[in-house]
Image 1 (tube, one colour):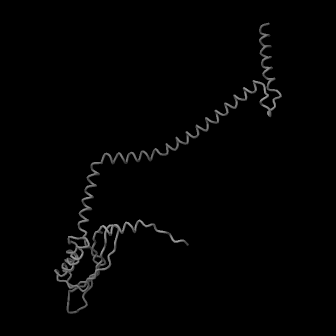
Image 2 (cartoon, helix red, strand yellow):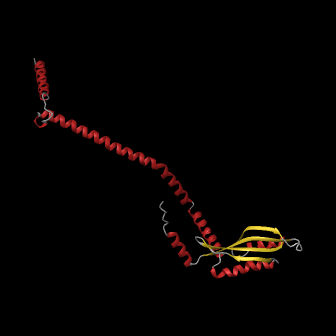
Image 3 (tube, rainbow, N blue to C red):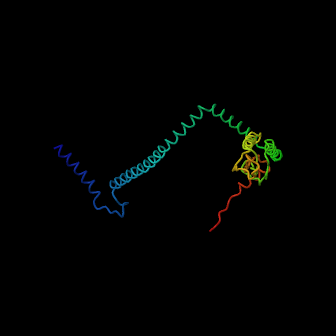
Length: 229
């Protein structure tokens, strides 16, 4: 008898709970019985938690993939900086050596006041080898970023070995002078056998003074406006 009473009680409970879900008006949830309200709130709560969890998890996954993508770059950067740190002393020595070398090269560039003396040295080098200058014409100065270039059109005549010695003397000057566009032909005078004629462009270089450097900076700082078509 006890088992029957328990079954009857459970059946009546389930029947009462099920009856609360019958005939619910979805347009008036406020008039629903307590049990449907609790179930509805529970389902909505679980749905919100699930949706929020997936959204949060997807954002975290994207961030994780982005950080993983940075890993190879960070490792390469770390290895590079580690190598620099290990060789820091040697790199500093190389930097000092380069700076000293650049200083030596700058000392080989004459200033404006020394250009006339350098032109005289080139002329003296040719005359000292017994060459005859047929042309010695300095051109227009070409200003570069950190130095100025002076081309000199020269034409000398003399014997082969004297011309070669002159070229060596120019190369051994205390200032930097280079020879370009060299053309050597036989002399036109039949009486001067063995005499050659050399056309060349000698280029010498000088450093820019403070005013010239300032002018270069101003010219490079000006924005270039494109032409409208």
